[in-house]
Length: 87
Image (cartoon, rainbow, N blue to C red; front, top):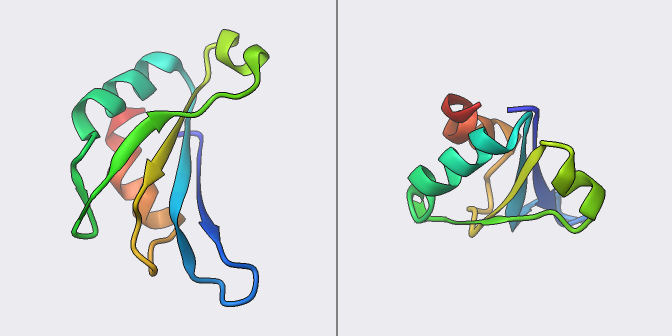
């Protein structure tokens, strides 16, 4: 895992219920997507989807996935713990 990010409300700093996980390569992201989609993260069945809006990112071998719904107390460590075994 290259990085994780849980999106937060600017005022309350509570999770907005979604986040991103960046992988060093696409194959790790594909494996995580296949094996973790609809799995439980902090008691919630999370949907995992590709998230690459920039075409240059899609072609350079880096994998980026979008994860939702996350709990209000979710943080980057939560995402890292769930995805670290995949890359």
